[in-house]
Image 1: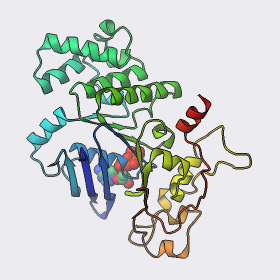
Image 2: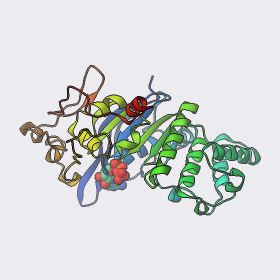
Image 3: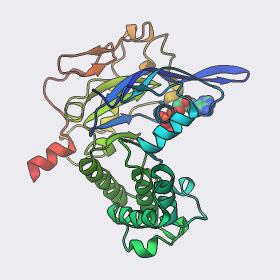
Length: 339
Ligand SMILES: Nc1ncnc2c1ncn2[C@@H]1O[C@H](COP(=O)(O)OP(=O)(O)OP(=O)(O)O)[C@@H](O)[C@H]1O
């Protein structure tokens, strides 16, 4: 059974004097224990609203939420706040993109981690501090005895992100949601943090939802990738299939926007044209249609229904990319081939 089952989740924000915004529009996906699932898409496609809804952290007023979010068989939507807080503390953890705003600037790092352990597991201060030291070491913070006493501003960006991961792990969550955890970091530190997350997932068996605008980030980490566009999943496939044969023109565009060294001669990067401001509403057709290189007449007349092929790939497109042989090689595949 899936650890997390999201079914037909929709989130609509009411705005005074303006039409409502449908941030999430009928999203469904599962996360199995120990698996890593990516939610990928451009800014504004609904990634963060989805994760905040799962965590029960959406502002209580102004958002109309429908659908179902079941964690280990329990419906989380509509759960009384107390029970949700307990579950969040015990089973669900989150790593946000900006550690400086997520960490308390006036509390030393070690104490922040220890307080999470104390609050959620009832551990005494001394034992919690000792466990915090171990966690800081585990997430790769050098000299944890010293760092324990330091404040967030005394740590580098990468170390702050590691501290945040330590805090999220302090409750030993069964599901961790990482929302753009590497966006604020430079490229080498990004790679280190991604390796750390992969190692922690393998070691602890925690399920992970990885939220990012960058398909390159999920390339080495996710078992399965959901590509979101304007609040809907437009393609879902295992990482290898998605990278080898993207079928939705949006996925293909995202993939070809990743700079790579092994692009076949003559094939150029073809970034997606336009912006989300060009979208049409889903009830009129495919929201991506005005930006789509494959658009047909039907695309701005009728919304595409999602279909699932024999290999389990979900696709929502009237005119998918047709490929008979792989044109892209996933980073994993390249590593495997080249050792
Ligand atoms: N409180 C709110 N009130 C009104 N609209 C909102 C609110 N929060 C989010 N939205 C809108 O919902 C849509 C989805 O936002 P969301 O933050 O989930 O996107 P995202 O894919 O996570 O983008 P980013 O990577 O920029 O955070 C956007 O159009 C956004 O403007």
